[in-house]
Image (cartoon, rainbow, N blue to C red; front, side):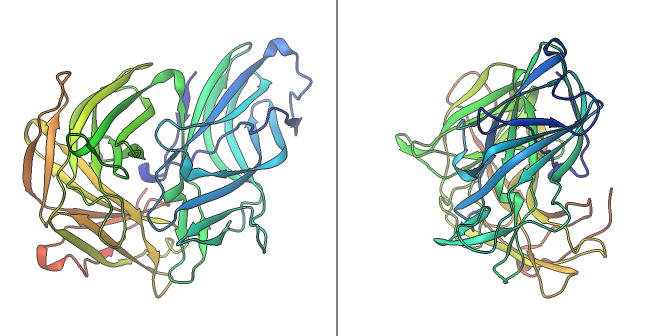
Length: 414
């Protein structure tokens, strides 16, 4: 099975999914082909759901899925769930997945999938909402998406065949807070993975032998771009598992603190393992990784000046450093959402990174000999990038005396 995906920007790959959260669904055709197509010309698509870690500002992200639409050369096929399904996305970390069931559809090529959510409503219980500091807030779905969250993509469903797909719903990046208004807006950021063409990475994070570190963020990244492919948080025993990774030979695995505007918990110095291989159907173990606690923190913050067409875009702020030598590559230490500022053409951000500016990292090259041997790479300048979902971007490399008030100006991009 081949999936072809078009990205407007690598940080905002928006791929909706098809599947069923119950075994009984209604399948209807809005054109060409139809539910009456012969069984011999149909295939099965099986779906699961997994989540990247949520932001520290919200503890839960609930969405209610009402159905999906499959759009292809045979027509448009709608699955309506017999009962809308409420899902808490942030419970689906590490290898915890939610089976979405399977759908039988005519074989062929499908170019688009629409995700259908139930209306949030105007009173509790809301169909879509977040929980922040113990309080529930409705999750606003922008106008214009009543027909579903759309994505242009392509996958082939073979006659008498089955494809197994996993949807990674990035709850953190999908929820945008509109300034200090208390309004939370849903702008889904999702990725779709072919299970048969993926592998995984696992390990245990600790601050000392037999001292597990729960709550650390683990990210698998592309060293050329610093793009976060998948991420999770360590469990109570410090373990992590990141399945459904595309096959590759030189990933970076970065261990860092969660994003936030105050001292992170856990407050650990960032560590990175370079050259990590991922093979289809196997899990690469990194063993026990001992991380250092941070003795100091650096707060970065400022304003983001948007271009004219950015005012309705979600903006992500990313902190990166660059490694040199045999471990060369871009490393993303942390990423978080910006907030709406005092005007439509301005947003603000605050980000606390463990360690002093410039940064120091623990770095190890992947080896089958465990435990991995780490060394310290120091005096690494931090570059702050801002990315809007429409492709605009901007960056700044603040000096030690300019970490706050590090203002970023966006420029229009592809």
